[in-house]
Each structure stands twice: as structure tokens, then as C-alpha cells.
Length: 201
Image (cartoon, rainbow, N blue to C red; front, side):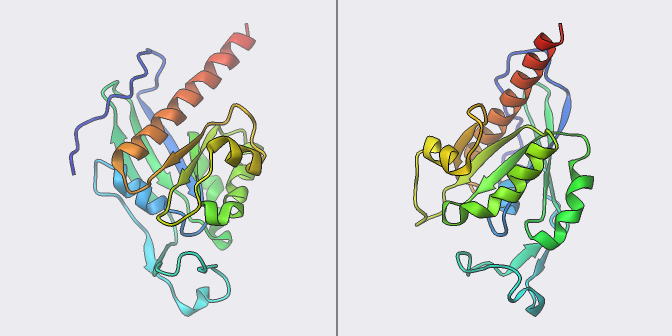
């Protein structure tokens, strides 16, 4: 994989040199795939084969080809020519692993919530968590082959998202598509910081 840094295109001097990003969403939505697609280093994965213990617990109805599951986290890194380095932490999607989210979210500047139009409700727990904890996030709709396609604004309405929260369509397998998601998130985070600074004056 080409490991050359990306140009974030921010053009500003307020971008931090390093930043931590969470990648969250429901079970089987593509978090491990997204981190693997963009990471310039060999990503750390904690995937294990699904066992009989997951039967009746993990809903595999729309992801029947899935044979492994993340039991701790995924980790990757991507550098931009603006000297910004993003560290990506993929969270486990199953409810029984949610106790790890508080630790993983420490120091995160923002999050990507991956969604699947076949199972939109699976990402609500992630959205609720980040809204409750004041973590800026974007919703990235992973366009699975054969899945229904909807306009981002229709998805926003279905998820009852605030107008300012970015909703983008993506392919978690495609590096350029994932890059676009991360650029949208960083711009959103920096815009929020700018508004907060202006309001404090």
C-alpha cells in the first residue's frame, strides 16, 4: 500500500500535530475494514473467530459472510502533508464490549460513526454516546454492495441528527473514500473549535 502522506487541505495553522479519532458503529458495519484501508502502518487488529457463544447474541442476519469479530480495538495511523497525524481507534461494536468505550475515547478529538442502511438502528448507541459526552462526530454511511442507497439528508432525518453534523457516503474498502471521511471530520472539529473560541470572547 502507498504510505505517502495525504494532503489534508486544511490550509490553517491551528491544526494539532497529532489527534486521536474513534471509529464506531454497529457489529459488522466495516470499522476494521475502514481502519485497514487507510492506515499507513500495518494495522493492529484484535479480531477473533466468532464462536458458539455469539449465537443469539450477535445479529448476523445481514452480514452472514462475517466470521470474525473485534474483541478489543483496531488501531491505525494516517499522516497528512499538513503535518497532522491521525491515530485511529476502532471500537468493538457488540454491546457486551461497550464498557471499553470510556477508555478508548479518552483524548479523542472526534469520531466517525459508520452506518449500514440495512441496519440503521445499530449505530444509534454510538451516536447517543458521542452526543452525551460532547464528542464531535460525522456519520459515514458505508455503501455495501446491494444495500439500499439514500440521500444523506434523508439519512439525517431518519437518524434525527442535528443539521450541523456531517453525513457522508463512503466505501470503507476504498482509501480515498475513507480519506474524504476523515477530512470532513477534521474540518468539522476545527470549525467547532473556532465557534467555541469566538463565543468565549
